[in-house]
Amino acid sequence: MGVFNARNQNHAGMGTNERISAQSFTRDVVATVNTRRKRRLRRTSTAVAMLAASLTAALAASCTGQHGPADDGRGALKTPTPRQSAAVRPVLAVKIDNAPAARPQTGLDAADVVYAEQVEGGLSRLMAVFATTLPPAVGPVRSARESDLELLRQFDDPTLAFSGAQHKLLPLIDQAPLNPEPPSKATDAYFRGTGKPAPHNLYLRPDRLMHAAPGRDALTTGFRYGAAPAGGKAETTRTIHYPAAGFTFTWSPDLHRYLVAMDGTPTVTTDGKRVAPATVVVQYVKMHKSAFHDVLGNNTPYTETVGSGKASVLRDGRVYDVDWRRGKATDGTDFTTKDGKPVNFAEGQVWVVLAAAP
Image 1 (cartoon, rainbow, N blue to C red):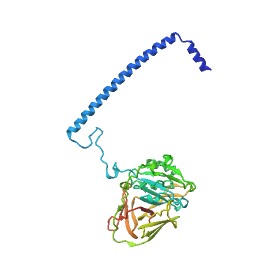
Image 2 (image 1 turned 180 degrees about the vertical axis):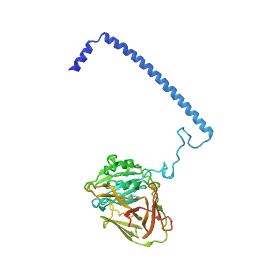
Image 3 (image 1 turned 135 degrees about the vertical axis):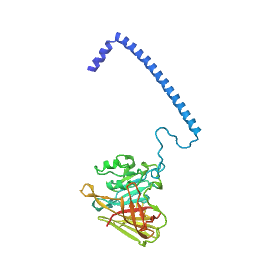
Image 4 (image 1 turned 90 degrees about the horizontal axis):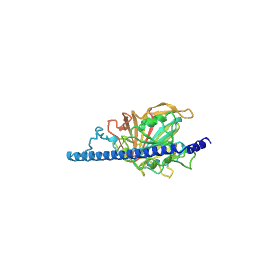
């Protein structure tokens, strides 16, 4: 009622006040019109001046005969380095669940590189890196670990798809030189499948994060591809054990690939395809306890991928005992023979199993 009465009193008190208000309103309109006219004139004058300056600069540039970018007053243009080429788009790295309940996985056969790493309780988890192909779906997607940040530094601004992480790790992920894309950020890129119970049913649609595969140039891993090195010895099967997980790679002469089995079961995708890399690397690394634990109190191991050590490279049904070296986090990993010669991998998918050094 107070508002209603105040309005009635204002209407009742019109007359002289109404005439004064009308005069004020007229003055305000005239002032506004004049101000707008002045602003239009200033904008017109500014536009003409900018056009004239642009034409003058263009004529000056054409007269000098320079074909490179002109100095615009902000300093010299930075020439991209090979690892910073503007034409190379970032890879997509996806953390993939590898618990028995998560198998079979989706899209794993389309990855260019698959890293296997040890996590809490001696179990394993995978990181699939995609550069040449983006499958329609990938998963199940699970959480990131601290070691992933060091491993991913070899790529230029990679996109990391993961389901989440321990809350104390999230700030480190946000500060890392990568593009984190969890479901909380890219809601429309994820969906829940119906064939497995949660949390083993979260899947990614890669084309919702990037329109096209970045291409092979984005794989700045340091890997070399080509003819096999001299030497080596015949070996058709290799098994690597974690405390609570195992990987077996068996050479198939017919496929000219290694058939993967995990925990004694052949590894297939959800569409029935056998996962079969052309090269398998067993990279022996240092592992130590990190500052992180899972919900059960199990410590999260930290896997060091910067440094040097020994590795076994399996290709073409033979094994090569080699050395590996990664000088700093932004470097790829070099694999060399005992006499220092680079070791080529076979064309095709590469699996890198990160195993504890003896």
